[in-house]
Amino acid sequence: MTILITGANGNVSGEVLRSLEGTADLRVLVRDRAKAPSGVEVAVGDLHHPETLDQAFEGVDTVWLLNAMGPDSTHASSNALWAARKAGVRHIVRMSAIGAGHDAPTRNGRLHILSDTELAASDLGWTIIRPAYFMQNILGSVNGDTFYGAPGEGRVGMIDVRDIADFAATVLRDPARHEGETYTITGPESIRLRDMTDTLSEVYGRPITYQPVSPDDAYPAMLKAGMKEWDAAVSKEYLKAYDAGWGDYTTPTYTAVTGRPGRTFAQFARDYAYKLGG
Image (cartoon, rainbow, N blue to C red; front, side, top):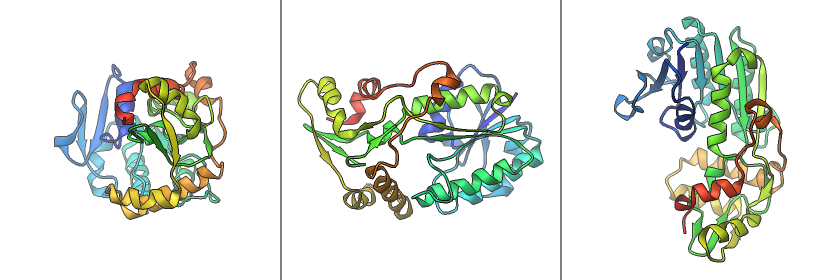
């Protein structure tokens, strides 16, 4: 069974590859062969250019479909589905977005539901995964003795990217068992960033104070850091929703499917102390 991993150079798909280590017949789709991960079969193509996809999808049984956030994301997802149908792919495991829906408070969520609906209406086997806010989004947020936090004061059931990958790998190894399922996965706790300071103080061995960052203030900072304008604007939409409590819930889905608990923020903070900042 050949599994094709799209978005292979990204953080989530990179972790999916790690979780699938030891699985036979892995193939990655990349735009630049020179940047491809090592140790797996490489196919060069671009989801935004359907004419480049036929060879990449040939002989593939299951696809991990992750396309980058953007105003043309539905185009990329649709191209992947078309290439999969032509190649005889049996199952697509698609990474969607938390709260994807026609009434989602972000453009990204409203675009994702279009792609989710197209996949569910296709004649392909499918599973959709909608992960919560990533713990890794706060990397680099500690500066000196201060933890700068967006999304502000809202509680969020955030999840470690490594858990997203482990969940995806569980589905990819036995996709038929998850046919037609839409999974919303969160971490084991819904917490405010403000309440993380005790954990961070313990990790760094000094008092860490919390400084909330408003969505309006986060937006120019994201642009200054090099983020595309559309991505920064949509991220601001997410931050406003989270600050208002939109992400304040957890689901039991991760444990129900994998058979083990998800990583807590304390575990994440210890593992990533060197990347959080400080």
